[in-house]
Length: 300
Image 1: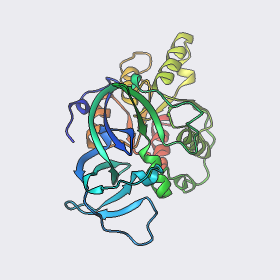
Image 2 (image 1 turned 60 degrees about the vertical axis):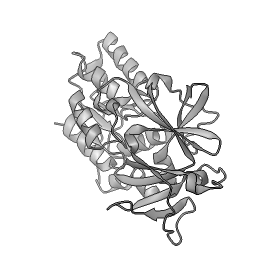
Image 3 (image 1 turned 90 degrees about the horizontal axis):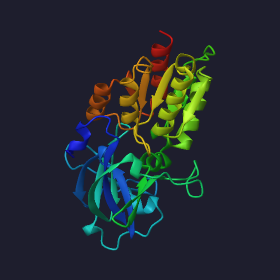
Image 4 (image 1 turned 180 degrees about the horizontal axis):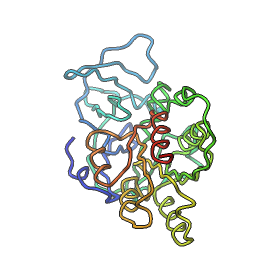
């Protein structure tokens, strides 16, 4: 999908595709969407997980179809011929999601999106990353990476990559992480600890990370307290691209190596990250490569 917002840099804006499953309204970042297609009956796969309807091949690429109603425990459509497929690409995966209707695309800022509180957003079970009120409707932004990794854990963070690194030397270089998913935040910290990096300061979004850096500046302790920044892209309040722009245009902070670690690293988003000055960009399954990048940027 071609959208102008993807060509802009560090604006803290995004476009959300609103769709429905049953009577509920959900959203997905347009940056993850390749195209929207009319439903066509997929080819079933024997012994597949219950949420996988099958596969289809619209052109030269085989697409796995996930029944989002099944994943969300919502009744299936009574007339699927009127339904739609949202074809996505993230974490280097092509996945189609079967939805019941598409409402349109809305331009928002990350400041508009509220993170669900702990009553409905436990790190282990939640698949909602944010909620936005739009024209009186509550739109739930879904964690599509979590949905896919629940179906196939091999698509998630590959913690086994750390084991292949062997014995590592303990390193106390302070690293600042901006990651809104509590589950992924914990997994990243655990993996970095196993890789020897034991001085991690975790923030829940880009705004919290920026406030922390501002505090370091006020204290005059930037050099001592932050040797590397790792940031996700999609986060409520402030996204990773906005954080990158703020850091790389600040004379006191621009020397700090910054790594974008996100499921959204495709050609377009990589170009955007490069234009903002990111020192490295990696997709989220590649935790081993993240350690390599930190080694190269912090230990050089």
